[in-house]
Length: 307
Image (cartoon, rainbow, N blue to C red):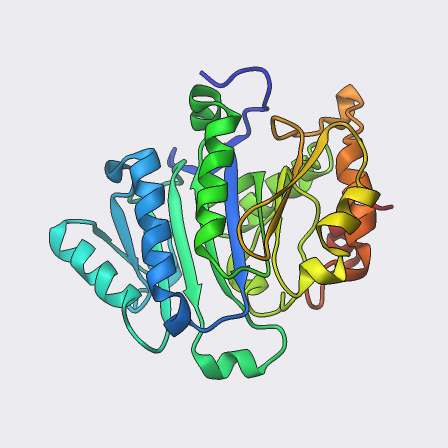
């Protein structure tokens, strides 16, 4: 059972498959090529599997499968069961020298609570200022309720310590399969009521984020050069003085800014103010990322804690 702490936001397709649900997302962004991240991402995947159970990822999304998205039940790619041979293929892809795009899912044809995705860039991509390598991992809200926020935070810190990250975060989120019209309409209807739920597009963000930051979240990781631009640990502590905010080092040249013990959905109908999020957003404003060619509504949502 999901507690009343979090809204239960679910959407199904006409044939009854779950295509969107509330959950958590952990994201990490690195201005490094895949060849420098291969071992770290492999260790991060193992940390995640050890925490949630290896059986939670049961399907491999083959991005070279050649299926038209309209032919497939959910993913833009072919999908195959993660048996022993395909796990070996995952390890081979992660150890490749040039680049790697990897998606691992809990279910074959509907959204699950668990998911692992990695975009590892070839070195030449990083000649462009916006490109980053990126990792995202999902957890269901049930995991947070059962295990508690301290365990989720410990997992996020352990993952962050593996990466030479520029930024990263953990947040409640709208987790979905594809950006279909019904899914995006549902998100548009709910995101203003629950500003604490992230609306994420990892593939788009990984092509344009650069050294900027996506916003203010429950757990916020900053590495270099962003950490120095924010004034370092001392500068952050001087500007973030609310009692709900904690600031701690998270490895060499990394800091973690936590906004409360639990993540907040921020239900505006219950007049949740989310003051720590607004204060941190002000600190981050000069470095805030805005999606390219975003429409006014999207821009307003990206600035939801500022305007």
